[in-house]
Image (cartoon, rainbow, N blue to C red; front, side, top):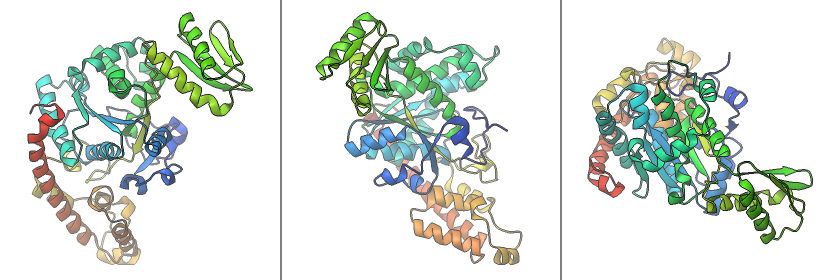
Amino acid sequence: MATKLDPWGAVSIDDYSKLFEEFGISSFEDLLPQIDDPHAYMKRHIIFGHRDYHRVVEAMKEKSPFAVMSGFMPSGRVHLGGKMVMEEIIWHQKHGGDAFVAIADMEAHSVRGISWQRCREMGIEEYILSIIALGLEPSATIYFQSECGAVRDLAFELAAAARFSELAAIYGFSGETNVAHMVSVMVQSADILHPQLPENGGPKPVVIPVGSDQDAHIRLTRDLAGRMRKFLVEEREGRISLRGKAAGTELIDAAAARLKEMGYRKVKRYEEHIDVFDALAKDSGRVEEAMRSLEVEAGGYGFVPPASLYHRFMTGLTGGKMSSSRPESHIALTEDPEEARKKVMKAVTGGRQSLVEQKKLGGEPEKCTVYELLLFHLSEDDAELGEVFDGCKSGTRTCGSCKKEAAERIKAFLTEHQREREAARERLPEYGLKG
């Protein structure tokens, strides 16, 4: 049965490798050796896939401009799943990227019916304070969709390039879907492309760290980014071809002139395209960047297709998917630390039915929510994780000892995080925000 990725519904994925074939997501494994100082999620194979992330890797190596962007819908308390995205944003910012954080209040209002006031309260109290507390630096751009005119204007432009039929195919929209919900999808595409607007430094690689359930937004936005381009640069046998998709006569003339300025002599101008016969395949990137710059000079966007990173979902403490709508399944960053400790002590593990069986057969850490807590959030020591895994598999480690250790760690983490959140409240003006 085909996998369904629904940005607003429940998604359960048993085999992440299926996404490579079904949705064209690339495996992250080949890129990992190229990354200096990889995030723990990368080393631990929690980040499993990507689209075009090699552009970002190249930018980090070359110390050229790039950005990281993601958004949070203020529809409930932020839990450890949201923390994963926050940490990925912060990691990229520390490695030279411009960070953009959207509070998706237009989405929450249109999809969940949450009032504007409540959206703002949750946006600040749940999400913004937590990401600042985790280490986001003040150079980041944090905004609410409803208050960002540039995003709303770009959403309008993108909507002119989108069709209802494709939204229906991607998201399952029907005649019963409210129009505001459709508009919110355009706003999310605008969020993703927003870091490439002229006021934000223009076209550059941008990575969107998300769970795989959000891939529909990435696919749509990549398509829209291509449609907003004036030129399509293609490698063809014996030449590089520039298709003037929506360039117009003057811009095609300017492109031909620019190519000659770049030193190409065999440039043939046709009515709607240009062929460069003395350009080699290795020149395509150079030509692409020249056309991108020309588009921006002419008032276009020159968007680079957004890249994305996909991380595995955390398992809920009660088994199944971690869900905001089921408090017993998750740990919120604003939760009482002692209550969180108790939840961990009650969590589903990968242990056997009895201690005798555990010692004889060993446990199944790959199915254990407590081990997952250590893997995703509560252990920075890979050697320690290896010992826990091996001890569980061999039956020498019991579920009780793991639970107790993880429970104390989650309590300590939340206690410290909530202290940092209160300090973050005083720093909101540094980020251009009021409490």
